[in-house]
Image (cartoon, rainbow, N blue to C red):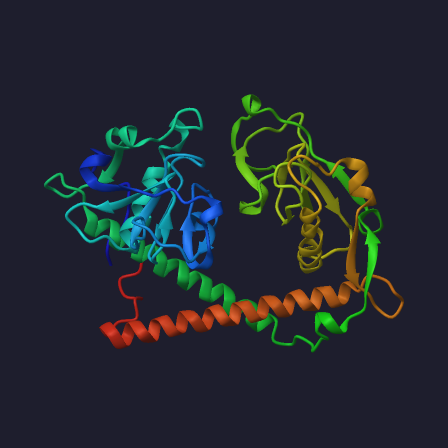
Length: 368
């Protein structure tokens, strides 16, 4: 049984320029982009940095690299095992004197992200600063970066995560084995309903200035369109609005972004709580997808204010009484969950078989 503890390792500072080859991206304007199947990586903090799919090609075409933002969402970085084009706002990192791989780059990714709080839009992570930025790495007895440990640590973490997921997914599939047959969405009758008809509570969150944020572990949900709307974690308990088991609808920022929040969270004034006393998790998830389509009507310049929210209408499947068919929505989402879990379990099993045929091992050996 191997020891993959980070605390028991010796760590040392290294300049980025001593660890990586740094290559620039290349500018490609929207006007010149041609739709295709090649990922175009921009200075984004979501979707692995992919902002477009193009058929263009240029000198930035690369694979098996870390794409590191020096502009936009500064210091955010993603591993790209596939061939992609990189914008001029993204640098490509490759490890010096070694062929990098998924596990090594994913380990390094998180160490780079720890520098994020030093940089912002007005203080760019440009190439000069990149080269002289220091990061901490675990080292060998010779004081060199211990790349073998980094890879082994991430492989072990992946294996344990997959094992935990398989246990979870198998249990869920077993619990859902009695799912009933239901009509397809196209076979259902749909009807318009105002949000005020659907939700008993429609309440905006409360403003909490960044300067007043306290360190803590409570999710702070704002108007971001990623990470379930969670912007950060805070410890504030006074003069805040804490909700649970509801939808949050972004009324500014990423307008229309809608997420189900099963946990206790603090809501900013940029989101509105939509709650019902009868909805289950699965009904909320179904309705969240429908509500999120409101984003098509709005933009950063046109917010969804309190009056607009109450008047907004959404389409929902109905029963024979022309009422929202919540039982159908529940069963539809349970069925969807069942199918997704099954597909991913099959994918994991296929991976294990392929690994066994290639190496004679399943990847389960040596797991803590």
